[in-house]
Amino acid sequence: MDINDVKLNWKERTDVLSKMIRTFGKQKTAEQIDGFIDKLIAVEGDEDKELVEFLFKLRCDVLKDRVI
Image (cartoon, rainbow, N blue to C red; front, side, top):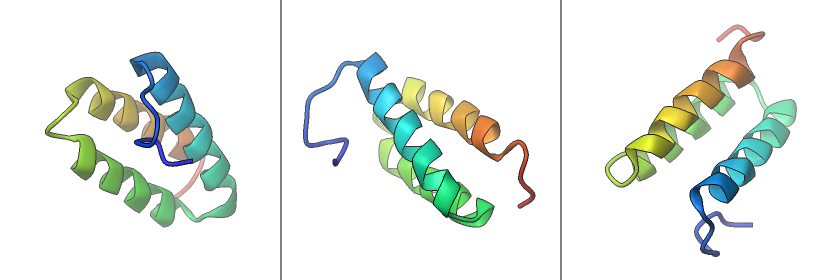
């Protein structure tokens, strides 16, 4: 699913992103997760400051037990 294919409200969008990154995180290294979130922030950064803040918190949560 591409997050931009459907019109979701903010809560639904963050839920989808959270599930996607957590699932992705089980299969990837910390560097790959960090890079993926950086790309999302770069794409969304100018558009949605609230989403960027959410992504920073999600990155900390997903990577807290991993070493980069």
